[in-house]
Length: 265
Ligand code: KIV
Ligand code: NA
Image (cartoon, rainbow, N blue to C red):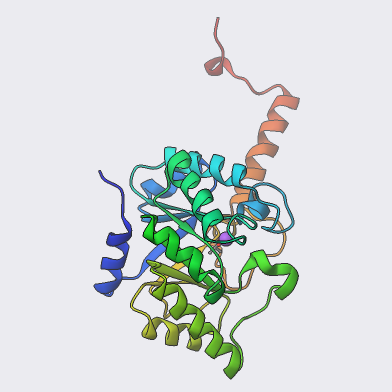
């Protein structure tokens, strides 16, 4: 089996097929999604919140991204693996972006990288694409800018909608193979999707984007506390894992684990 490529996902969109993307942060979980046929996995900097215990994505480092991206690559055979460039890894300019993206491609083995920003990241995207690194853009809500923008729906109102369209076109013109639209009104996401020829990947962007992405811990019900309204919970892993841990603890305390079949003589 060969890996899914950026050409495969753009071809799927050209055939009118919608495609799913999920985040992954470790080899074992990624292998489950790979076997389930998820074609594209994102080693998102959402690992900051979901995996590393940070409050936001802002503190995530290149070392963390590289280590966990390599794990996801090792855990998968088929999926296209996309890794986020974390905050501070590309804002200085295209050369810094290329240096860090190269690390993710060479050291972790990912097939593409993602970075936030439309017009403001245009030069970074262009240099990476020229260097042969496929890039996924990310506009609308860009969580690395949380300190400036907060977490709210983007692109509301005529001026903001026009800016989002300009950002989308800037990402496409710079050579990105796809673009994430995060937390934007469904009507605007549909308009961006009609306007662009590259696939749009929605999260909190309604049903009309070419693809969808969810944070896996949210969609599997592992996240404790508040989950965004745009996510759907397809399982209750927090309950399942908690029950397993509680039952194990009870059996150890009660002396019913281990049994003869778990024991060597
Ligand atoms: O880091 C992440 O999980 C993301 C997705 C929400 C698109 O960037
Ligand atoms: Na991200």
